[in-house]
Length: 348
Ligand code: SF4
Image (cartoon, rainbow, N blue to C red; front, side, top):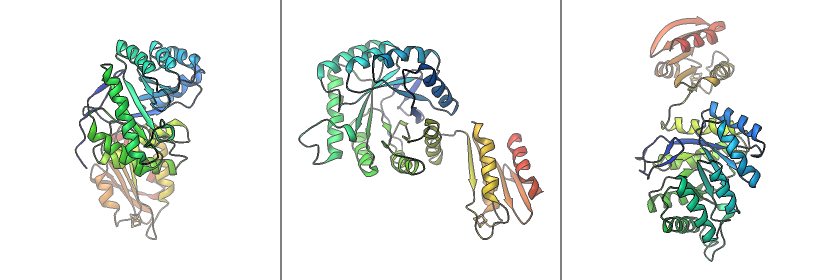
């Protein structure tokens, strides 16, 4: 894995983005922002799942004003997502948004952007330049090379913000197509020092959306690129947060909650591993502490993986060996597998 690109750090509320800080997990609410109660409830649920930054859509003035009430009831920083109307950015900042996202594809007037920047500067609120393949501004070279055009649009917008002496900038260059996204981020990463928010836009339903996002975000993170991530799914946002942590855990970039290693099962399997691993994973779903569990179906790879985990089991015919921190602790009957693993988890 490549060394992480050292970006210029920015602060969104109490969360540091870039500058070597841990990669931050974010999501976006799927409620109507004007429905304050539902939006707060959804954010609180996402906070419980480990979401560290939340973005909300701001389609109108009422939504911008709702930010004030929402902010009072949540603990993670809030980013206002603005399209078309610069006045909504200003209202959102005044309502207490910790950052805003603007899309160069639909707020193009320089004077309007200058007005947003004045407001953001006053309150030291970062701006995410969120370039999106689906809403690129018109331009002569747009259809010739999409990657180059996305990078050009981003650089133009950076220069505009810098011309107003504004540097609290974060960038995103998202597309549905993974090679396009990877090429765009890889290119911009070499051209600026600003922190990067990664995502594959409109990635789709589960599991295909998770796979697509994991490939795109995973390639970039492996290249050392990326300071925050969002997995965009056509699903409840808790799935986005869970998937984001799985990506980060699989690259050893974050430790968060349990990791369950379980064998795929085969003709040697002596017990119902699918049921056992499923039951253990369900039991662990509210645990946030990092712990590695291995559920293995035989003695071929079982002991090695079980030994490497905090708690493991290598199942044999009717009996299984229970491991804790690399050592066999005891052997138990098949009917006690679940209970024995849970007991060891609690000891760890
Ligand atoms: Fe098969 Fe054993 Fe490997 Fe599981 S650990 S897939 S049972 S060989």
